[in-house]
Image (tube, rainbow, N blue to C red; front, top):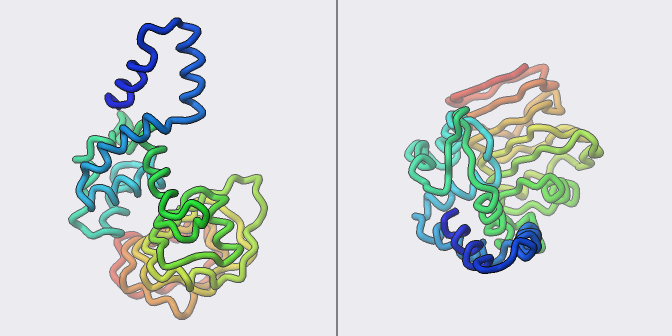
Length: 240
């Protein structure tokens, strides 16, 4: 943020108020110069810290500290549980929720989008619901996807899929579906999953080929399950 302020200040220095307003309107449309300077802070992070920052900026802004720490621990390993507390780019607000400035959040998302500008299925993280739905409905998933965070607005249509689209996502570690209607339940879930959260899980059973040996967090509130039996050491299991 100080670097961003330095850029804005040097650009607006000695200009009239009318020019300030016009220039700031342009900043709302494009922050390319600011993003380039902000990225210096990101480039200075260790590789593990970069992964944590991208996870939070893309998927977990606004979540409680405990929830984020549990997910990071499950996804990356116990040693990463408190990694976000040392990141100067990440803040914890008065309600004990993880937050970060909009410019910094956008920088993280831009970095991930640049992994594959035209093909969302080849990115490491999916959070924008239209990208995720496109990947599921067109079966465009790949082994590059490690996190899928899906929160579909209530007015959107049902996700029309075959149910086996997760087969291509063999490195998917975290699958979180906060909201969304599906035409059918999943016929396959990756054995690589560490975190499975699916509100309104749309099937009466878990796929028979799912072996949750790596699963640490499992939350399936408001699900359609009639039988729930998973073997493994789960830190959390919520079925309502």
